[in-house]
Image 1 (cartoon, rainbow, N blue to C red):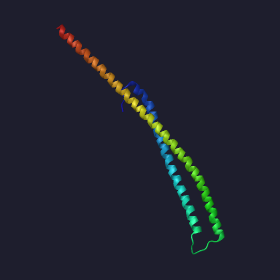
Image 2 (image 1 turned 90 degrees about the vertical axis):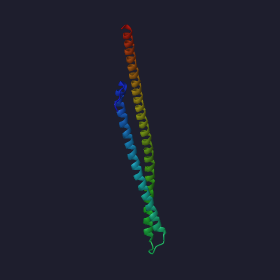
Image 3 (image 1 turned 60 degrees about the horizontal axis):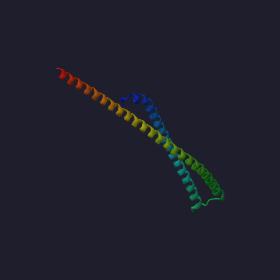
Length: 152
């Protein structure tokens, strides 16, 4: 959009920088949300592994499990649960990062919106000044024309 007010033209660089920061914040927020979703899927897979191994140990089947097999399965379940604990910590950290990135984006978006509103206000003031100046000139020409008509 073409800005008419001289101050609005000077503020254009600031607006461009703010818009760039807003887009960067939006991009970072999106990337973190995507990463969070991937980590949640990994956690869900680990939960499914634990459930599957627990079912394998506890459900009756045609083949009997040896003590070694049960011990191995329990050890593996323990490792998966440890990974789940780490995954939960990672998810909590990522959730905080997503919330921070969202907050950053909202702040940047508000800043850009405020700058656009300022530019609109400046252009509106400029238009009003131009209208007043045009009206003054028209009045002056009308007065001169009236004065000339009285002289004649």
